[in-house]
Image (tube, rainbow, N blue to C red; front, side, top):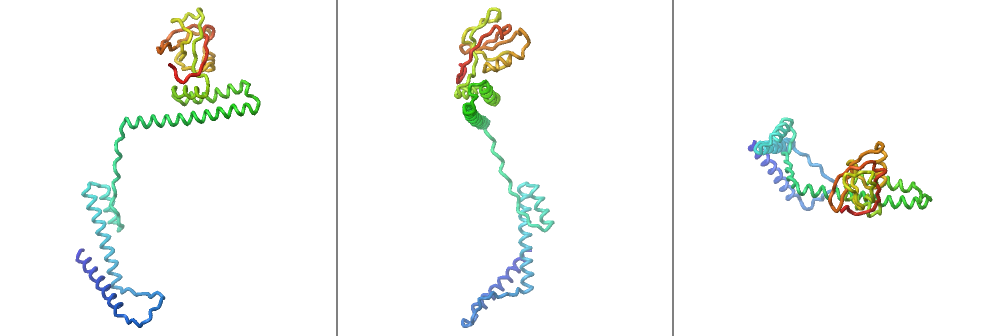
Length: 262
């Protein structure tokens, strides 16, 4: 195969040298036309050129097969062999670099940052929607109606469902929305297992986390008559659970807006 390639290359070089000598000996006085001149390629030269291209193609395919076999890339070896069998040149496959393992700490930080960005975006949209809702109520004359109260409750209920508690408190505090319930007092008839004190923070009833009076009333409406409930309250940073009879009659609350529960 190499002898054939060398012979073909030698013949082509000889023809090129002959053509160059002929051009150099061309009479200077001879006028040259600007029109393109068609040069007929001898059949022998055309055959040699085609054979030369075929030999070069075979060499490339053989080189691809060797490289694939030496690197242990069986798939690449098969692809190169199949291309040779079909007479189609195939470039050697390029192995994709393996992804570097991600540090778990870095992954947690990235995920935490993404959650913070998503929460901030949601809060911004809700605050903008809240302001537009109030402007609409003023323009249409229902700013003092119960409708505005309900509309704003529904709007911020979305935030409660989608945001972590800490971010929900910060967002509603910025919007001057009530977001925490405090104990104002309780009747002795309630017979709480632990005395409730004014200013205790009500966190949940029967495990149901509550932030607003409307949520509190909605939950009580779902209970049977004179129920016994379990309250979770926080007092001076300490959480405690206690039971109370019929909170609708025996528990008094007030609401406030805070940035965080202390």
